[in-house]
Image (cartoon, rainbow, N blue to C red; front, side):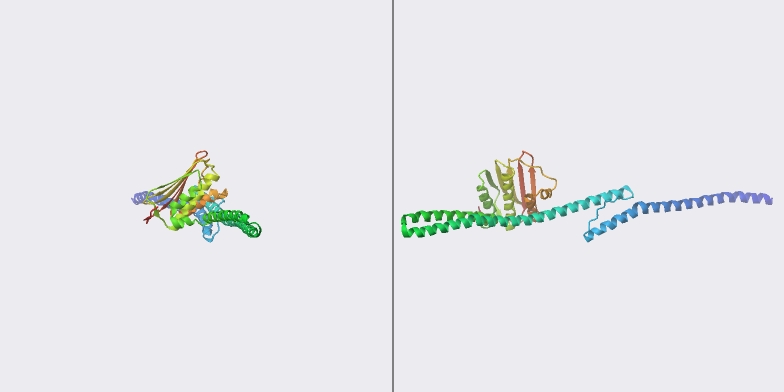
Length: 316
């Protein structure tokens, strides 16, 4: 009987020991799986992410890493590296464009100074020299031949009038005084009157803007008209200045050759063209916009808009 009881107890304990063995092995398998998973995350995720983070941290110090070394991690880490590489490339390109633009701007200012100096020397001074010679000849003729005095004085007067007109034109290019005196609409109308192929119109009730805003639109008109005549070889140009409750818009359209508009206007800087880029920067300064529409042999439309919150109507 004792033997039967021992056999029964062994029969009951054996499944329990078998279950404990299975549980033991499951625990070790779970631990092994956890360790393997942790190592996988460490090698494939955390280490690559740490490397990217260390490179990205140097951006705060002004250093732009290249991110050109492939990341041995999950695909998402490699995608992130490529995105950072693209972003750094765009930053470098933007910095290069900005440097080029600043250099060109400085060069443009110097060229403008040279142009003004050359015009004053070749035109104004020479005209004044002719006037001085005419007056001198008239003075000398007065002693011998009084009939020649009138001729010399009239010649000197004509040269003097021409010199005055040239100086006014030069001053208008440097600083449009008519803009200060009569406002934007009249200033652009006067600008358009100097171009026989240009039609100008004003729409809406004219009101005053801040002086710097009016100057920005005026310079945009100068640049757009200059481009239409010199580069597009347009036969017809129309300019429309529109006043509305929300802002002032200038449209300059031509029937010229047109051009391909790049994805970003900064690309103009790489080509050595800074006029349209300058217009855009002026518009951005006042919260405005520049819109271009052009195509080969389809003409060009340049539209600039400056929003206005407060306005005062004026008579024109």
